[in-house]
Each structure stands twice: as C-alpha cells, then as structure tokens.
Length: 89
Image 1 (tube, rainbow, N blue to C red):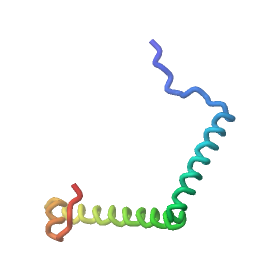
Image 2: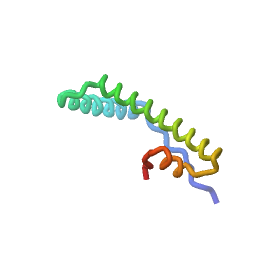
Image 3: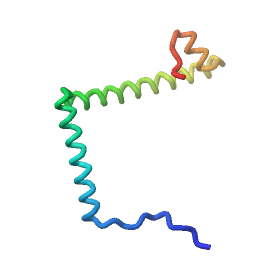
Image 4: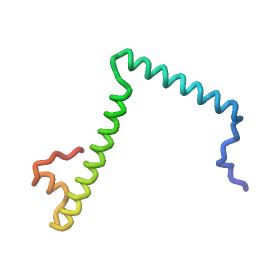
C-alpha cells in the first residue's frame, strides 16, 4: 500500500508570479487605505519594532523570574505576587 504523496503539485512559475503580483497589489491597496486614515507606514514599522523589543525584554524577565523561583524553591506565581506583578492568565 502506497502512502499518498505529501509533495504539492508543481505550480507554473508564471502562475506563481501572477499570484504574487496580486498579493502585492492587495497589500499596496491596504497600505494606501491606512495612509488615507492617517497612518504612516514608518510609524507602524517603528511600533512593530518596539513591540518586538518589548516582547524580548518580557521574555528575559520571565526567564529570570523562573530561575529565581527555582533557586528559592517557590513557584513563579509566588514571585509574581511577591513583587506585585500581574499574571496574564
């Protein structure tokens, strides 16, 4: 018994290029609409960069809390309440 192939059938390069052009046009239209509403693409890029930085810092903080909890023999939840932090449930 043969297993069905997991490989997708090849797509013609011209068709793939056309699909990518359609996607690019759609995204350009969405950007234009956002700009009409007062958004600036560079500001959105900066906001996204800041969110990435925030998440990196948050991850480091959570890692440190986990290590401290291990050293103290308590749960991370205990440390959150000890330091007055809120848990994201």
